[in-house]
Length: 181
Length: 291
Image (cartoon, rainbow over all chains, first blue to last red; front, side, top):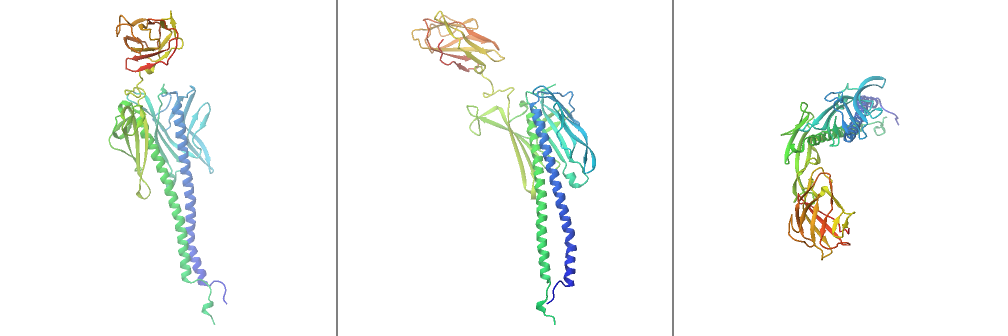
């Protein structure tokens, strides 16, 4: 009784392997990329949600918005205000140097000064625009703040990285108890 | 001799089956990848739509209440020159294909000022602000997101529900009330808590001493009614008579003591209820009290 494979069988298997192996490898690479893509998107959305929530809370509870010292209509915006205890606070765009996967990046981040400076946005995402625009009613009262925030991955070399960039445009009301100074 | 039935190895059918199974397996994985990507993209679009819808609501809230009108729908456009949002027609189309339309909708309230869907009166001091985002989802399916918020004209209300009445701005303090010489009610205070003047136009007093009649009323240091004038009706009046007094204006923030409301008989131990009607027709009534 003959045991083992015939030559033709081996050749066939090898040919099959040659055909399938690149597809399998490509698929695994795609899974890995996809996982990174999903992770980055989730991180960007979380950052946007935290940033918006922080801004909403601070602006809603502000007693005064100091428009003369704030920087509006700039990609590197600064919002200076006083909280309900009349303490000075500042939310601003600044640059930071971070190291990621042995590469150094100079990125934009958003920080909050509430006695101490602390970053609101993560060190592995870049804020490329943090623009604040004042919105007024027909009596020129400050009634809202428009926000234009762009959040990007550290590297934007690939098409997938580009598709991860979040261009967030929204607006927050200024409450009647908040006065402009 | 080679027995054909003893021949081992794979036949072409087996190879084809193996290829077919592999294809099914890898197609399933590829399908999962595509679904995962689409799902992430879909969430991303929904999140972006939420921010944009929120911007639309805030735009309508940033405008003066007087700039809004019910049954409007259209778009809001921001001008960096005037720093203002203005209303226009049509809808906003974003570069990624999402669209936003805004609407202002009237609010109906019942007689207790509770919001009702139908059958109430249109409240001129309230609007629903609605922001509607629409976009194309997976496989061309229509997606939409609607945010709605209530806006109330707190600062300058014109309707009944949010316009403070005169009676609402007055408080009465009868805790220190006493009888002067047993016939004159004193020590009842009328406090104007508002920053505007409020006028008393009518008064009705109820008491439980039938033999005693009302003779005269002083307010803000002036006689505003007596049985021989000023005011009406003429003559001494029994309990429960509505007295049309001379308009007595209580200045903003002022506390007035009704230092002299005089009866014909001794009133010691009597229980009273006082009813005041103000310039806007609103009424304030004390609890029963015994000075």
